[in-house]
Amino acid sequence: MRVARARPSMNESCHKYLNRSFSFLTAGVLTFFLLTAVFSQITFSNASADLSITKSPLSDPIIAGESLTYIINVVNSGPSDAQNVVITENYDTNFIFSSSSLFPDSGTNNQWTFKIIKAGDSQTISITGSIAPSAAGSLSNSVTLTSDMADPDPDNDSTDLSISILNRLSH
Image 1: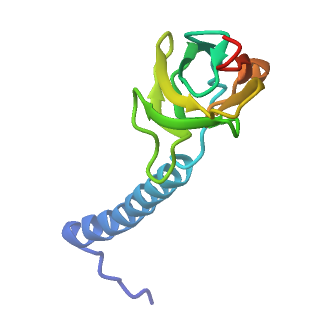
Image 2: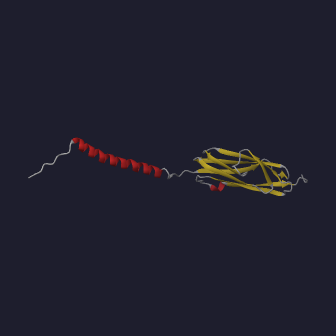
Image 3: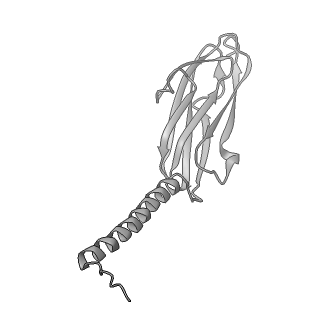
């Protein structure tokens, strides 16, 4: 003897189907959001910014005890914008910093940070100071730059400057 089973109603069948579909859809959406969160932290980029730095004095030679102004110029030749560019100046012991055209980073007189230097743009810093009255020979200093971006030509990310110092009495 066969026992007749009650067939589920159309409403119950739809309910089971929707529950299974909803669970599958929920799992898919959660997976999507997790993968999006993970891959948003990974950078798949070959971006680079060709940065270069130069420095030039407004006068050479200089006279001991007098002021000196020189210009630092940073250029981004691209192809990408450079991020977190840090310029660090190393002063000669006979150079006494007095001012710069852009404010140095807080707590320093020899470091400047630029959040972004766009491809094709440049930044210029004018630095003024005095030369110690007892200075003789030459004044030498260097400047370097760093960035969060890869630089295809790191050889031009630093430069040195040497300026002859004349004695005040011999001038």
